[in-house]
Amino acid sequence: MFENSIGLAMAMISTKIVQHFVEVREFSNLWGFFATRPVVSEATYETLSFLMEFIVALVVFTLSDHYFTEIRHKEQQPHE
Image (tube, rainbow, N blue to C red; front, side, top):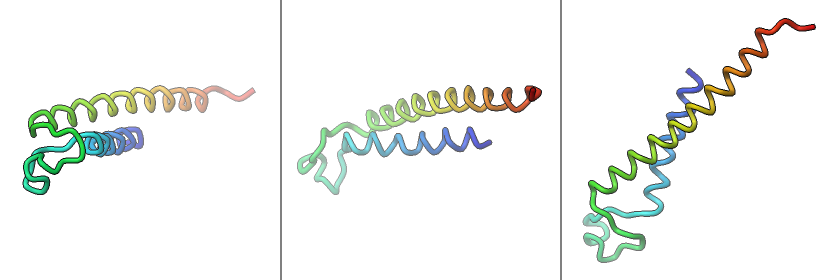
């Protein structure tokens, strides 16, 4: 469960990474006229966000599974 929560947290942080680099056309930036970052459509933003979440979660899940499995095997080995 700890591994999954780490992966979920990293995936949620990855959406902030996408928000840092691109903006969506909306009223607050007058549909891109006053944008300070590259402007993308909402569909492109959602696709980028999903891909970043997926990649980050996959990497974190894989690494955490590998290291926690390694730790469990060390604990199960008899001590000399």
